[in-house]
Amino acid sequence: MHELGLADAMLKMVDKVVKEEHLTEVNSVTIEIGDLSGVVPHFMSDCWEAVVDRTPYQKTELIIKTAPGTLRCEDCQSVFLADLDHLSCPNCGGKKLTPLTGRDMTILEIEAC
Image (cartoon, rainbow, N blue to C red; front, side):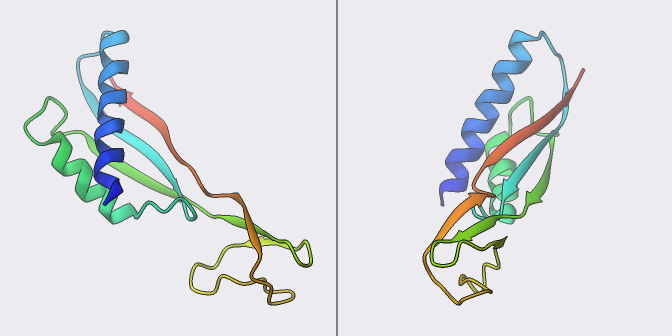
């Protein structure tokens, strides 16, 4: 489960920002997970709970937003939203697909004081 490593790395990034900005409390962290990133949102949420347990961030809420992924068919050059249940081109049925968006996981906001 690579979400545990991602949650741990994210916590270290949040902690670094808190120290650099001399903040005292983090209320929430908002992230965006792309549909094609390979990160499973509910696993990420569970892992966040595990890594913040017994830390100064244990009451910090993790808010997860998802971003759709887009793909380009290399056979017909169509661009379309990814359907993870049917990874083929809706135009020609091609399977040679290149991801264009939705591959990232990004920290969008750290709400703190």
